[in-house]
Image (cartoon, rainbow, N blue to C red; front, side, top):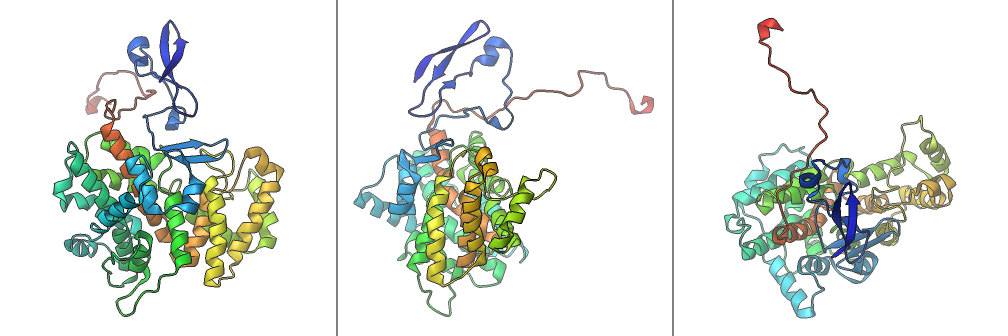
Length: 424
């Protein structure tokens, strides 16, 4: 809603107030009325859209999905329930959730010709490279759900993407280790089905470990959506041109692959392994404080959160549960625990508001379960597909939606005349 105006020069611009969060100056007419652009590298002070999905208060360490705190969802809900919430605005009734799960389970298989498509990749191809290619190729297999003007086709495409992503991710893993692909088993839950397709083999029955499945489900919930981050903004930008949903999600996967975005949990795990044991932590904290030392503590601090990442609190407990259940005594987790406690008491980290984030623990959990580091970002993409799809649907339905077209501050040469090559 509009809440007053802000005077810039001799013009008044409306100030809008969302349901929660800071006020926003509506500058859509700023260029037309003033002849000037705004300059905001990284869009850190610019709201690119209106959204009702996710709210983050970085100073307070708050993350809400449709108003529900992330810790409540992670502890009490399921990934399928959160997916329904993000897509449909409200938590489902029992009947609605059962119907949604049934619908998703009917889309878990992928076209059989995709198995041949996988074999076109080198055996040592990075799983994220495979994900980019395969998800983008879905539009070549599912023509009946690419008309974005048809709400029913958008709904079918959304369900297909959410349902097929675990199958595609598991196939990427199986291809990398030379094992046969496993078809989905729709009697299992969404997360248990993924675990079986990833680690099961045809020669023997896969045993479901409820503690591991619960931890994975929490990881999926905690990564489901995170407001207008780089990959989500990429999905929206691609979608603003009218691109089909499969192409938009493939674009999001490509952006997520960047080490500054989806690869952070892998970097945090590698750092903990480098430190090795708790007694070496003071040495590395000293290095982190030294501006002349290139070493940086990964898994601390966040672009948005200036407080404790609420997702990290959930995963801290989950890490203990998984390692205890699996009987793993891991010096990496001991190092993580000690590093967390020391950093939270250190004036340097307190002053700079460098708190542990979600990546700090997720890498430890995934490694304990048996995932290679190359799969970490794939799992992130699997979970975030729900948020991408929900954001894409919201964008398509927004009457104010326009094709994305950022402007620039041009600093190149002014106009000059062409000189023939012989005279240069």
